Image (cartoon, helix red, strand yellow):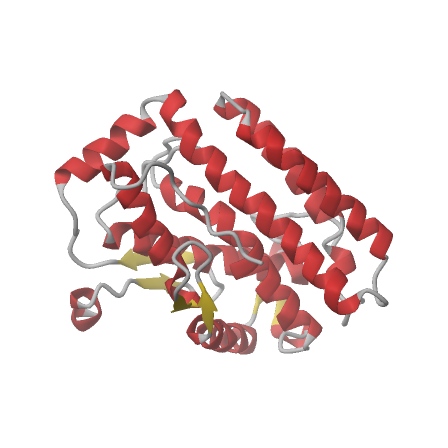
Length: 287
């Protein structure tokens, strides 16, 4: 653990049922001026919404291209007209995000766009339909296999985002779109928004469609909760770590990096924008 901390490698701990327990990120890096700048932005809705708009732009863009990827690769196995319609809705929503001046309005637009996106999520599940039917997003606890694996992936991604923000000197608990709440990594949840469709949703669709994750990897708890079992978590984490080693060309930096470094690079761009080294935060736009 000490060796990881010295190398700025964050560690996250979970219970056998997949519940987040603790996070170790080592020493805090960065200076007090960076965090003071972050706090000033968080206290100003006018400043916060500028960052939040870009993050939600990234989220909607990535949701749309996840749909477009399915259309490109599996046009004959899906209702192409239905998926294209939702893709167009998300595309038409993007200009509205740019014009938003308040956080509540932005949250409303994001919520409706998320409903549209999840309305065709089941259509992108091509195999194991009986075991991974998606009807609606449910959590705390998840009530079916697909929601169980979504919640597990979101928890891991939130931990990665929190570790990345801490490593560049930012406070993961003070967000711009997600309000302050004791014990909540609000800025990590902000950063996670643009990365959910590609680092979690798209990854899960691949695991299910390629049968890496199957019905045997889940167990039902009291109260109808559904969670990954030991074998399921092992299969998921193995695929998760392997995926993070794969390379991608960063759309803003135009350099090849590992998928696992995407949260760190975005956190670094976040810090540079807050310091004033960049005029505007560039969201991660996958294509």
